[in-house]
Image (cartoon, rainbow, N blue to C red; front, side, top):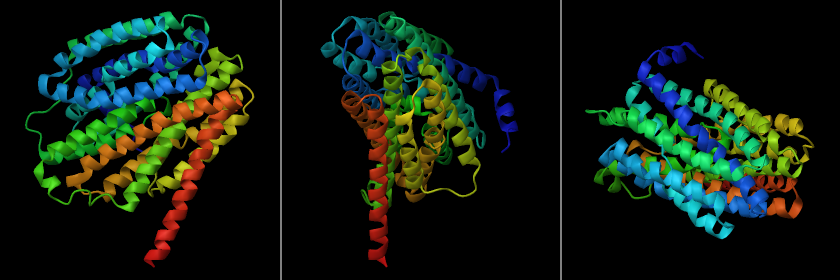
Amino acid sequence: MNFALYRELLAIRPIRRLLLVGMIARIPHSAAGVLLTLHIVLTLGQGYAAAGAAAAVMTIGIALGAPWRGRRVDTVGLRTALIPSVISETVIWSVVPHVSYQWLLPLVFVGGLLTLPIFSVVRQSLGVLAEGDQRRTAFALDAITTEMVFMIGPAAGAVVATSGFSMAGLTVVGVATSLAGLFLMWFNPPTRSQGLTVECAEDEQHAAEVAVVSTAPAHLQEAAAELAPAGAATSAAQGLRGRLAGGFSWFTATVAALFAVAAGAGMVLSGTDVGIVAALEIGGHQSEIGIVFVFWCAASVVGGLIYGAMHRPIPPIFLLLGMAALTLPMAFAHDTWTLAFVSVLPGLLCAPVLSAASEKVADLVSEERRGEAMGWYGSALTAGVALGSPLAGVFIDLMGPSGGFVSVGAAGVVLCVVGLALQRRRRKAAA
């Protein structure tokens, strides 16, 4: 690997400033997930199934709102498009801590609809500021800085919530995110390049697709939700020619299997997220949640870097099978450090399984239909994320802290075994 590329990229001032702004802007929301979960469990007295359901509702809101947010950036410019987010972040997250669970659900849904689109804005701007071969390096660097954010945010959120300040913490998240949005409006990074050729646009989209799915497990909810509209927007831009090319002719059994892998990965990762919080909260080690997230996210970084340097790809279904199976031992961790070290094993396969599946979809689907295919890929990933949190929450309430890891790990293994059996049967039939 040529690490000098990172140094050359950081020497470009606009890119360096954009990455720094993006990193700071993401910190508040990186703490929101843990804060919201612990607020529902500790302050409102609800179970982890309820906390998982709230996370799923917010994810669905992000997924539904992101296309509109992206279109607004394209049509009216970044500054005008961010105004609803800047207002809503403070208003909604100042009200959420003071309402019952029944009112919290619609509020977090609206909060998801109007969330500050920092992930997509940074990626879109990087695609403009970085050119040619620099794009992939820029997106990789963005993923690494985001990993660093999710080593800081959840730890800070856990400390605040377990100290009895979850209500104040959620309010601070909203205010801080609004301030980040104002700073982003002032900075106003470019989101489009005049005269960009179709070929360059396709290269940029492909690099962005790879970057989105090479991010850490902890923030999969926003990363997954924002992938779908990116693909859908590109599909629309490709126009009538793509629609006349054969409808869903690109949707083969192999592509469907890759969508199932994406959904399975989202389910395992979001369920593991809830499981980590539950295991430490129930064990009385809430303030140490950040330790496990640091190990988990750092392992994802290392795994992504190693997989990216490999000359031969590994089938995504085998990577998912390994990640799901290695999630099961987390159920037997008896303290914080054991859980942290055990989380490294599945964490190493997080970025590789998502990157491998995304790359395979891009290889199998023609450029004319790739945007649409990636949109459906993002939808599958988002669906898995929305399923994993409540699934883990239900089993945590039934079985205790180990239930989250067992449920999503076992479900992921079963999905892969069934998928491999179907693949083998199809090959025999074809022979």
